[in-house]
Image (tube, rainbow, N blue to C red; front, side, top):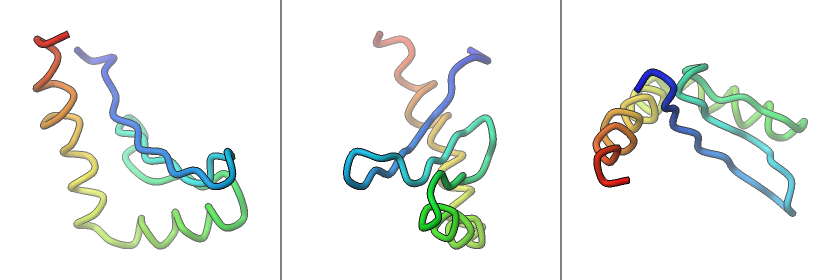
Amino acid sequence: LKDIEFIRSYYYNKLEVTRFDSNVGRYVGYTEFGVKQADYFNSIPSLIASEAARRETYCLHNIGNW
């Protein structure tokens, strides 16, 4: 169960712009715009907390179903 991670990626024109990874615990940008977007997302503590909680509420909750 420790290997399970929640990843939320944002794409534009088939290019990954920004990603939240529950193992990292924050958003990471992969383009110039994505870095700005990640900085903005990371500045909102409630957003980071809700994304981090999705690992428990979505991933770990459904592990028995798969």
